[in-house]
Length: 125
Figure 1: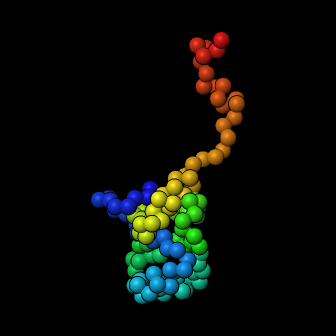
Figure 2: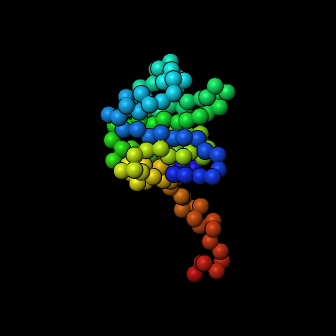
Figure 3: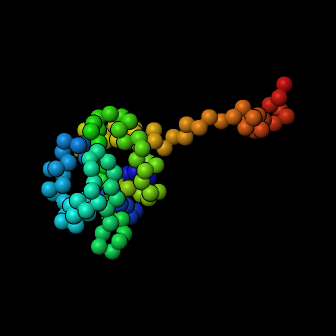
């Protein structure tokens, strides 16, 4: 689940524009910067960053164009099924939310046979 604030425990999800990544990185704790360096993180991309206890403390996604409504589409399936609190510039939050929702949608077609299986005698003429 993606939220902008929550009273429930969440994991920070930082979504950063590629051209702002270096600035974002300079503001992070040393453990985060070392993790990204030692795991050979390349932007754009996704990284799951653990804390000292090994638990996931933050997720990072860097995209080349966050104003693109589909830039974050793969996040919903690329991240583990946990509650994430969004940290991103306000100007991109609408596009991020749309991409997240589009990524959650199941585009698998429903078969005609499956649809017919839900009909009842009353539905048939």
